[in-house]
Length: 463
Image (cartoon, rainbow, N blue to C red; front, side, top):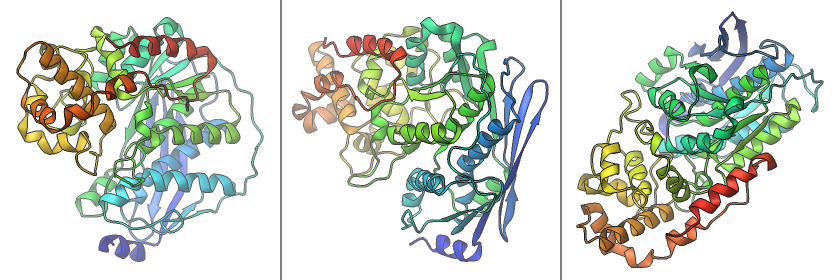
């Protein structure tokens, strides 16, 4: 057991969610939260939603908006709680039913699974925290106010290949689409522009980490991964409410359901999984009763299928980036598991020259990435803690790429040659199996099913 974890929990027994405030101006909505850890410090993270270009249909500080903002604070909470993991969490600014309190504990526990694992913390759903809503009591099915709708689609854009595919699939609905970003980066703006999304059709949000948390991290308090996509979920839902949007259209694939540890339940992408997507839809439907649908358009597909579709969308290739290490410089760093994964998953469908133009290097020729390669291909029991696909998808892509090199009489790069000598003969059927797969566990509304079917027809065809 982590000694710091035990010591901090004894020293700092209670985390308080004291409140939040919403301030409106002509071009911005600011939400500021008040958290504190008894005996340590207070945190006041802030979120700003730029509204100068938006048609606000529902009051950003009305009862429903405030209730959604309260839930957004609960999604933000783990980022601050994790620094010393107090065993008691007291919520003093809003009400939860017993079922809702259990819902939040499930999200926090599963969403912090990587944090617990990498910090050597042994705990369980019951023991990690006791959630005490000390505000007013609340009954399920609280009274609801009228909702004015404009029928918009809000599309979270991260700058990677997946949201590019979603933007392309919804290109016929451009007049209804708004791109949604958190802490905008060039790749997000550039991929949206490549999709034909004008600057005026953005919902831009700015999320600020309280500097006190960064200070505590530097001082040696606990740090690690929390379920950020749940913050995106509630923030986009708040934006959908104030703009009267009908749909929040995500770009999470079926592969996000898989964990990172062989035989274990730790999933870096838990808040991108279908389990969370369904839980979120159930929670918001029951608590708010709003006609806002939250679903992933790419849920039926795996990473190999999405890569095949993306490879045909040449207008995005110069703009997309999904390397976390290089995000601030808007580059592919060329040294991390994410860069290697994206390179490999695209390699069956793009020419080597095209891949080198995108990444600036042949990632499959980087012998120093052998460890990352083994982890991605499933040759080790732990998959990299990044948003990457399954080992089967990686090996299918490698087999298909190796076959392409062989057909053309080309010398394979070193990592591809290593794979071929290791187990290529056992992966011959994987590609066809994965390209013909379709995950029926999805929440896609009937109105969007046609474009999904068209994509499936395209990607399931075996060349």
